[in-house]
Each structure stands twice: as C-alpha cells, then as structure tokens.
Length: 553
Image (tube, rainbow, N blue to C red; front, top):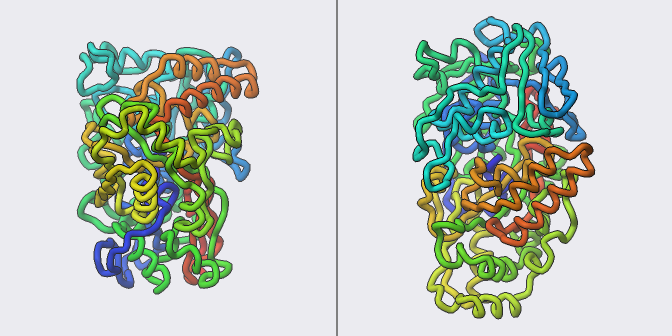
C-alpha cells in the first residue's frame, strides 16, 4: 500500500519547515463529534486520494478510514499471521480451486446480512477494468481477469486505452449459497488466503449498487460498511477537513470502547504535531522527523516507537522518464551516491534504518545486504559509473515528493548527496498533497525521480514485489516490466511449500535490485504519540491504529 501521511511510513521524513499557521486542516480545539453529543477521538491523516471505496483505496490515509468502516474475510494477529474474521473457512485441495464459507451474524450498517454475494459483487466490480479501481490488479490471479482487462494493442496494460472487455464478471467466482462461494485461480497460489485481509477484498452491500450495476453516486462519500464504526455524516473530499465516524452498536464482535472517531485532515505535519501537543489532536502514528528527538521526553509513556513494515524509495519511470531514469547504470550510480546512514541518523534521529533490500525486515524473505554494492555508499565509484554511462550529459535531476508527508528534509539531504557526489544540478520539487502526485504518476506526468513508499497490504514477500514491479502492477509507477521477474513470481505462488516459494520470490527480488527502477532508501520505524485524552493506543505493522480498543483516558 502506498504510504501517504506524515512521516508515517514513507512520509516519515523531516517535516516541512512551513509556518505552523500555514496549511493544515483541522487546527484549533475541535468541538465536533462523530455521534450526537460524543467527544470523538481525533486522529491525524492526510487527505485520501479517492472516495471511501475499498477497491479504490490504495494509500494509508484512505485505508485507515476504510478499515474502520469495513472488515473482510481475514485479519492479522500480533505476529502478522492471517486469521479468519468473517471467513468460517478457506479451503483448497489443489491451491487453484478455493471454497470460502462465511460466518453467520455479520451485518451491514443498514441492518442487512453480509452474504457471499456481497463479496462476489465487490470483487467483480473492482476487477472490471472500466471501473478504474486502483486495487484492480490484485484480482489478476483470479480466472477471468484477462477478459475483464484486455491489454491494449501495444502491449501496455490499462483500461483507459484497452479494447472493450469481453466479460463483466470473473469466471472464477461462483456463489454457492448465502454463506459459500468458490474461487478459481489462474495458477496454484498457496498464499491466496493471506491476501484476503487486504482492503481490496472487502465486500460491498447490495445498497452500494444502482440498477446499472455501478456504485450509486453518493456511496463513496457516505459508504455503508460492515465494520465497528459507521459514517455519522457524508464526507466531501477536497472540501471537508474531517471525516466523522460513530460507533456501530450492532457490530457482531462487540462495541468499540469510544462513541466516535474524527479523522482530521492535515497538509502540514508541523501543524498536526502542534495540535497534538496542545491537546487539540489525540493520535499521530508518525511524527515529524525533527520532533522525534524530543518527543520521547515530552510524551513519556505516550510516545510509541516500534518496527514498521514500510520501505521508502526513490522511483524512476524507466519508459518515459529522463535519460537517467531509463538507464539502469545511471540509477545505480544515483543509489551509490546516497549516504543512507547519515540521512537516517541525522534527519530521523536514528529512527530509520538504511535499506538494503526491496523487502522489509519484518517479513519473511528479507535478506540483510541483498542490495549489495548498489546500496553501499561509495561516492568515487558512483561518479565513475555516472560518467562512464553518459551522466555528464545530464543537466538536471528532478526529485518530486509530497509536501504533506514531511519529506522535505530527507529529500534535500539526498539532493545534496547527488549534487556533491555526481556534480549535477538537482531540483527538489514538492507537490502539496500525496493525492496530487499519485494522480500525476498514474498519468505518467511526473518527470525525473519521485519519492514513494510501501507498507505491506498483507504479510508476504510477494506483496513487496507483484504490485510494485510486476508488469501492469497496481503501484508500478516506474513502468517496469521483466518477463523473467513475472515468471519467478508465478513459480513462487505455485510452490508446494512456503520455503520453496520463498526461493523464487527472492530470485525475483534480486532482479528488482539489479535493475533499481525503485531505489530503496530506508526502512521505517513507527514513531507515534497520543494525548492525555486517550489510552490503550496500539499501532499495528500495517500502520493502522486499533481504533476498536482505544479508550478515553
């Protein structure tokens, strides 16, 4: 999942040095409530990129909200292991054909029961190319996906340019009864159940769809979910500075401990942090980089520092980017010019770790030093490699980043590395919002390099590879394509055991590290804090706050 917010995962870098009064949604002492008369727990997020639809939510801020409104077949325990949630069972004898049974008693916020048909309807909607859902690609493993997402004539994936689909539903999905449906995959995939806790696989209620099979016009602003919280008023993206939720008192798993949650949207982490210190905000799950050094002393037991699953990158569009974006040797020279150790120790007060793999250390499959020479700081070799591959002809390197994530300081530090070590002009260019740079990336309009990060959707090394590097991957903004890489992923999927599959995933990882379309910079640590108004705050490795168990202090 793309990391959006503040120093949150990838956002986690030094804050913008903008004045506190400058941009920030939600400053001041909020009296608004998520349910009538209730003082809400106030949580900092950035503006979601899209409306609140699970299949179209692929960044952390939107996911935080959607995950409070919806639940899926699976969830993950404290050890990052998948456990059944709505699912009663998920079974297969051949890893291709799966039978999924769901439990009784789960209902939608409108009181109707959650059924197998709700999952099939949601999955078909997300998988249908013309619906342009960001999580569409996760269904590529299900039989019938290609018919719903035909490639365009030049071989590029993309529903906007592709021919009309020959099917509107996945042939691999079949409803057996109200509590049972079956899934047929395109190839054996032992890790399929692990995926099913991700937001892309959440169900949608019958009320979400109009007579034409499309979502109703207002559903994304006021979704009916099946989770522990429900909307207390519609959210108008781009206008509203808060997203207000109330407790769902009919939730099968019990009632949340607070009456209401208010997500407060900020465009500047400094503003959010000052609100937290003043008691006008209750929870931040990533702090501004410059605040980390003193936050532990200031917040004491209310400061949270723990491992995260996030990886921070600099990406380069290898098809339409500048010359240095297209040349793997120049990308390697850029990587070797970056002093990751100093950046993580100085900018982040030692709360980030220099990245040496595309896979996070919190996931099985990570290998210390996997990136090798390419991620080792060596200015002399970097300059030699740069010059030998046409780097002297490069006039300017552009580094684009989202300003609402607190990335200015580390991007500027990285830019200084490149200026000094490669003797090239570097321009750091901020976008006001993460949503804005994502929209331009999807259109291929971001020149040069760009800051990006990933936090796992589900605990598998495959999740750090397929969405990001596979041909047509949902977050493959670098337009990378390698047939050998794609085939290795399929071999990993089809392996009889996890260890055997891991071998193939790591081989695919080696190809991604060799080509460096995304250059790994650092691994994240969660650095959060909370106000005196709340207690029992827990943040999981997916960077989601456990809002169900938050309590008023």
